[in-house]
Image 1: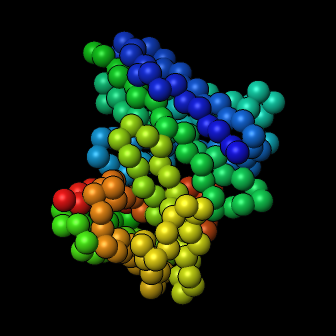
Image 2 (image 1 turned 120 degrees about the vertical axis):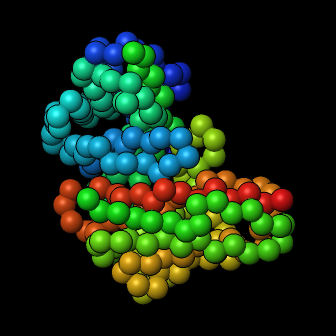
Length: 113
Length: 116
């Protein structure tokens, strides 16, 4: 069965630095990969979507890369701020089973002032 | 942006009773709605997918007689936890998508269910 791995250890970085989070997957070929932000006790908020035929996507301070050969996506936040502190989830959706999402368990990011 | 609401945000109920959670898309028509369950520090687990006017599709291992889902309209879906037990205590989150590219899901704020 499919497996999605995100670093379970929290990522602690200094304000102003670039945060890089990793999402690795196995036994799956997603058509779309999405990144979400989740704050404690709240539902996830959509950040970025990248398609299987795209290598990179940017939105303001966010950048996502997608390597279907390595089966990996990297999520970057540049010029990080304490307000970026949250848990970040990756989610995969297949082409053949649209509407079926598989989420990683998320990585907690702590940005220290 | 698209907004999804959930009600209630928190609910405590006694074992054996039933609890209904509502999920509404406030400013768009949701062609598909999803119900997830999340345990502390764990991933979101998809419970079921529903389309307006049709029966929900449940994921393997989810009891459809226990978790009743009704997608009554393009803006409302409900999840009823029947005969709740303490092991049903969890964070329940709904999401919706409007069928428009680029296909992101809009999540509700979640409902914390505690069964005593």
